Image (cartoon, rainbow, N blue to C red; front, side, top):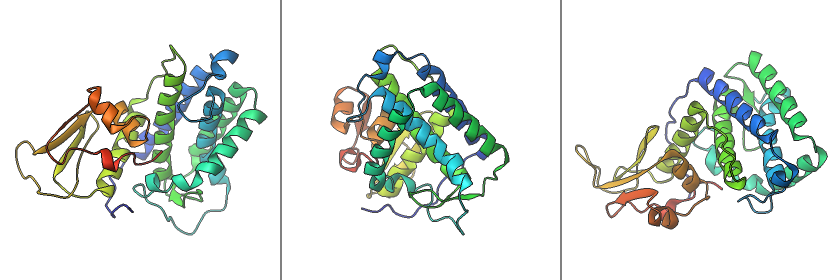
Length: 265
């Protein structure tokens, strides 16, 4: 079902730029410490090793500088709330590109260094309103950078899950932006006011058709932590498993979000 049109929340472009650079820096610092054995470990992305996942992260970030090098489209086509629902069509293309990139770049630290340098240089002068010809659809630079926080945070979590003992930190602004965009995507997919979804300390959204509460505690409440929410929204964990593991609390007859998740994968 296509998402309903809804006004997206605003993000501080300067903070988002810093968050993207900081989170990618955390990834680079971790990747340079990995042994060949660790790079060969499987990840929860089917068919991808840690090496391929790390290479994919450079590709996800490199799209910023690469798209800034391309001719600017006349106008943006995609809003932030459109983006989570527009990524699935590129899955096969992304898989092929990731495998090729990992094979062609055995020195991951060098690849990360080049990616980081190109990103920092590109962001030093590009205005927030610059439109990028992204493959999912033309977007402003400011909006596209918010989508990069999703890529970085989700795959940082994938790397941490794949390598025992790896503990890549999460930039607070990147984690907040990722959480909020995915929470807003849920509200766009299932518009309504009968259920309140809380992801403290970053997001609270109303969703699901039904009676709207006006005061006091709403009759249907879902609450979870940011990383669990992100895993639910991207299919890393199922609703059933998260509830059974007490990673999600859900009360009320309209608090079962299992049929609405994942939002993207």
